[in-house]
Length: 330
Image 1 (tube, rainbow, N blue to C red):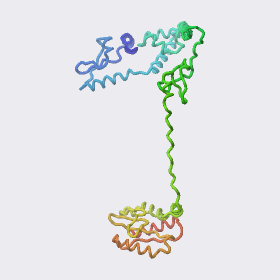
Image 2 (cartoon, rainbow, N blue to C red; image 1 turned 90 degrees about the vertical axis):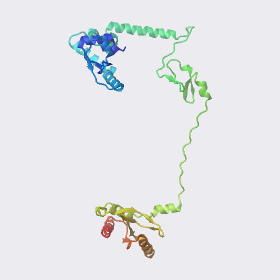
Image 3 (cartoon, rainbow, N blue to C red; image 1 turned 30 degrees about the vertical axis):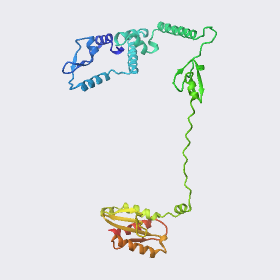
Image 4 (cartoon, one colour; image 1 turned 90 degrees about the horizontal axis):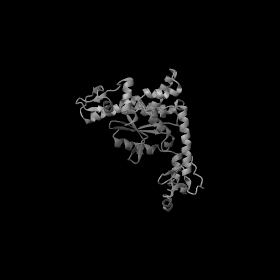
């Protein structure tokens, strides 16, 4: 039986503050929680808890036990606070511990363990200190060899741990041996020496593709112009076209002599290719016109829409082209 629920401590609690917690039983009279309280006092008051099955009985017992799981730090804080209150009321400091033991549900040993040094009697503290010194002297005498000539082992501030069995020593570093930067006890050291070192995993080789002339040309002269991207984004964000049901796809490839529209507007099953002709199309008008007419026939539409502009990209040209497309689609 633990310190907190011993029969004597329960009787002391009831005598000091009365019955704080009831014995819990179900509708059939089965005790769910409070066996020790009932053993201490068969007439302890009870409380009935309705349960349907064993699972509910276990839940009640678990929740009842939860309130008693008080950390030792919290108990210590309460004892110190109570000791301070007794001292304020006029109890001499050397008598505080004895007075506490009369009212708290713990043994004198447990109370002295939790209280700070200032509340422990000076005589008992001195006896304990001398007893510790004697124990230390006996310990050093026992670790000497039979010839009494070897000095006792010194206690290591940093212990040594075996890398294999994890055994720890504070006194005998000579029983541990180093191998490949790790320490092993005498039992594990021979096996560690026999083991072959694990080869290091080589770092994966990063493949760097060889740069070709076509790759450099594609970077310097991209197939997608900035104007195409900007107009596509503006059309996607246009509320008027969205309300009309138009949607847009970028750089759609048509398998008619490799015709690629700059932007394709769709509404239901209808597709309307849009072409933005800048300086790169100069001199290619006849070819572009023939391909686009063929595309219009294949799609069954009157014509593809072509919007020409001159010079480099600018926001003003983007807005102008976008307005023309909105007007043509609405």
